[in-house]
Image 1: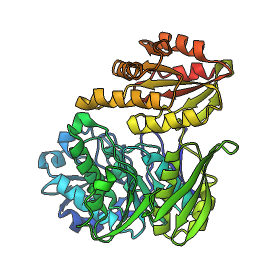
Image 2: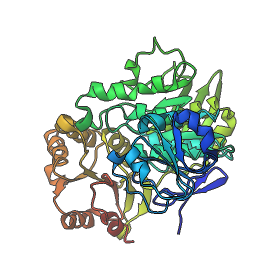
Image 3: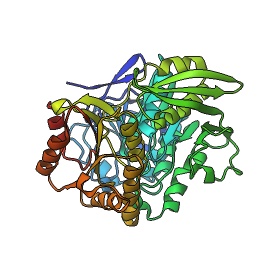
Amino acid sequence: MKRFLSLGNKIIPNDKKESWVLMKTLQVDQVLPVLQGTVVSGNPHQLIKHVVSHPRHQIKKHSLIFFDPKKHFTLPKDLSTCTLVSSHASVLKYMGKGVTLIKVGAVMKAYWAFIKYYRSQFTIPVIGVTGTSGKTTTKEMIASMLGDKKVVKTLLSHNALERNLHYLVQFDEDTDAAVMEMGVAGPNQLWHSARHFRPTIGIITKISTDHMEDFKSQDAYFKEKIQMLNAVGEHGTIILNTDDEYSQRIPLKQFKGRILFFGKSTNAHFRAGEIDFNHERHGMDFILFYGKRKFTCFVPGYGTHNVYNALAAFAAVTEAGVPIETAIERLNDFRHVRSHLEFHKGIRNCLVIDDTWNTNTTSIEAALEVLRETSNGKRTVAVLGNVAEMGEHTLIEHQKIGELVVANQTNVLITVGKDANQIGEKAAELGMNESHIHHARSKKELMKLLIRHATEDSIILMKTSMRSSYKDVMKQLLNH
């Protein structure tokens, strides 16, 4: 059974191998000058309906295949109707009948020329979203606010570089807009994604500390994030968090594009005030100050961070032509991605907050705020896992989390993972009762602790990364 990715009121099938891609149909003779190649054999009028550049991409009929043996491609025997682009004459020599062969000087140079050409076919708003946290939620809010337009967007938080081509070639003649989550897990990754998508509007939600194993320094990570300014260029718009410490350091004097700020500060173009938890509607009330007007707003989902996400989304969609009143109305019906601060009834009638999609210091801070503000007199239990990829920042980041646990007056702390033990040590150092601090070394031990603390009068935050948490613990906690 195929899964489907909803694009506004249109549907694009999207299975696990990401093979079904509805791109604008081209012909070989259209792209040949772009590739600067020569047709060795085959049909120069062959149709192109799919593009393949990575071993994980599935080859199907009418695929344009950029073949680089260094990427360990395994080509199927039947390549009839396909077009193969390669700089390796020995590969081209042994291809079977029915294959259109294009010889180029450098296959990756040809690939990037094709990407530039294909993207240039579309003059639509393309919104790129990056930041240490809030990317996925902001992206989904934007897509929701765009309403019944046909919107191409990244799936969940799947923003690995090899997926970029898959998303790009979903652009077709009917596409009205695109919103792309552009992650940064290593050097040059944002710029690599920008070469595919060429965003016209760029958002930096917030910059804190993450992925330090690859970046080695906070400065290097910061410099990669602010590549978004170069990505949108002088004709684009950059949207920044005016309250974020690192965003305030972004050098803007040389940027010639349009700049919009969001936040609580008075200089924000999209400013929030009177932020309050709405327990009846399970979300946040706030006043939006935009221009000389103010609007009463509600965002589904708890946490001040969701107000910031909504502000960034407002800025993006108004730039894309959506009236602010329409965007506010559509926000009311927004639905969060799974495992992003989802509330459930758990075993022994406890209340469970599932925030296990991913974890970093910033998102833990937001989750602990929600735990505190929604406890309503219940005993608060925080289950916190390792923050991965911190490198030499591992100790200080986990100690920061210990400080956040104490600052939010968490009643019980349960840590999971070797490095997470440092969270408990810092919390104890700051005065938290050591009998209320636990470290689980196994799934069995964690479940024993959860069963002990799960009562009708407790609320349990599960904040561990999906990559490292015990996968079935949540199911047992919810008794599913």
